[in-house]
Image (cartoon, rainbow, N blue to C red; front, top):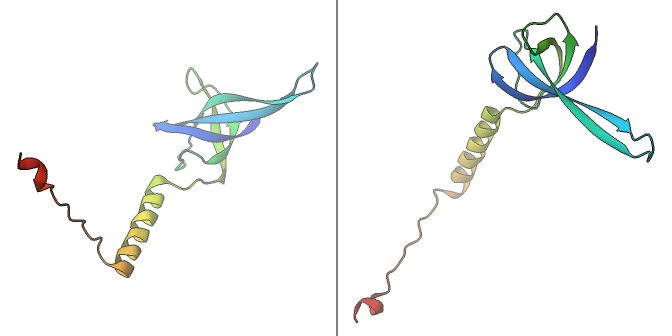
Length: 116
């Protein structure tokens, strides 16, 4: 069985994620190293996955036209947007508690222009 390590770039489908796998190559003539990437569709196997997670996918029987892999292991989880929003909300509440509510600036109209 072939296994690949990659990063989830899309998790918008049901039970399916898009995993981008990068590989490093050396040009045969110029010896310059460059990076190629390929996207694979993988079954989630019931895991709760999000964009940015690093996973290991394993080849399996065809599950659909383009889906031939399953997620077998989660190596590293990326922070979720909801967690970041909660942290930002908590930080904002702490600032308001420390300094009080933000003050509104009063604006004055210039009355000299309306006299003419």
